[in-house]
Image (cartoon, rainbow, N blue to C red):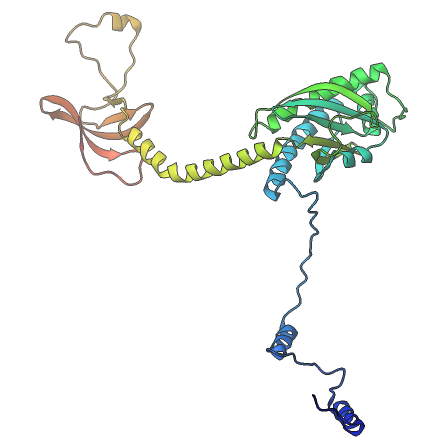
Length: 351
């Protein structure tokens, strides 16, 4: 049986623990090197890294590089559209990218106002439909400018008339032409206008849980500032962007490897090229009658003495001069001077 402590022994044991207990503000080293851990923690610098939350239920599909590719595409599109609108509306127009976000379609649809002006595009080979939405006040400003107005605070109506819809349809058809050129380096896209939509609540272009890319652009027409948004389906967009990135990387590597081979090939072709070299003994002028009466043995006087150097002409330029003579029973010119170089070449015979 274990030995039982008396009451006096229990009291003495409690007093000993009370007197040896460390202060609350002192560090308590733990077994197994706890003091070393505490010391290391004390000297470690604090970091200010921003922690970005990750949604495991809705992970992002596109990488940072792919978003940058889309940014380059629509930056090019904004430049072309700015130039087109400036000429068409006879006002200074500027379009710039505000943001590019990946989200679900219902989030984009819920953010739209009830009355909108949206074009639905068929963008083969991409599956689904691309949407281009322009704010109503900007649409009315565009229509007023197209009709010859000054564009000073146009009156925004709750609904578009048939004439206004036809006018905007023509404008949208011109706007989407620049999408083909902007996407040309990525895929052979052929966008076509399917229809116009004016009610966001009745517009169900794709499933609500569909992942889309939203490109938000600022639109400045004169003193007016508005916006337009582009909704891009992501059904096979990630595959196309991935293939484009791999193709671009392969081309960069191939270009780096083939540079020296290309240079060598060019120099080989240049070195074996043939040139027409003419020796100019002198110049003279004859009439057509004198030429028609020339006979064998006639002497034609020229503007140079007999002992003057012969000029060698390549193409239309004089490159060398030299001394005329014979070599192996053939007429030849020995080069004396290089006319188009600061450093003369070594004297050689040109046959």
